[in-house]
Length: 119
Image: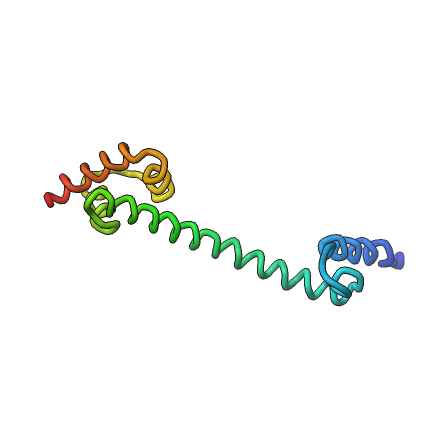
């Protein structure tokens, strides 16, 4: 059986980590061990950040919808409940965009929600 030498693969592995660590401060961008630890930690932070981003955007959309709803004489929860009762299938991202950019369309949706709830 032929002997396998790992030099080429080891260099590729190190190069990949050091390229990922480019721009890090001090030894974290120069030394393989420090860079490897930081790259692993950074990837973990990035994974968590992708989940948090979804949460933060949903919070922002709800705040914008609530502000628009209150300008139209209702609240966020009553608006969402009324839209569900009226079978209006629209997501929060689009609702938030309408609340900011198209006040008339948002007001119409608020009226639909109010009439569905019989307020």
